[in-house]
Length: 101
Image: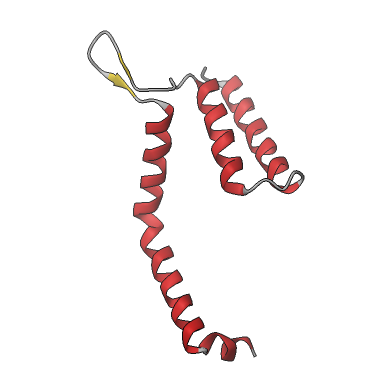
């Protein structure tokens, strides 16, 4: 599926994700994963990797989602890790309490 119908389904997926998180109190990670799986299937991404007749491989849903996570992690992961490290150091030393007042 391509074009305008895919854009409409994408917008509906975002609305459904917001409803799942805010109204039904489903954890955001689970909501994002469920919506991305359904949206990927509707967009025509196969469930598993498929080798086409010409020898090229079409990536499956797990591969596409994994590449998205790894791309995000490589660009912002180090910032998240350092932030968590600084936060835990502030908590252990008691400096977080002095920042609060």
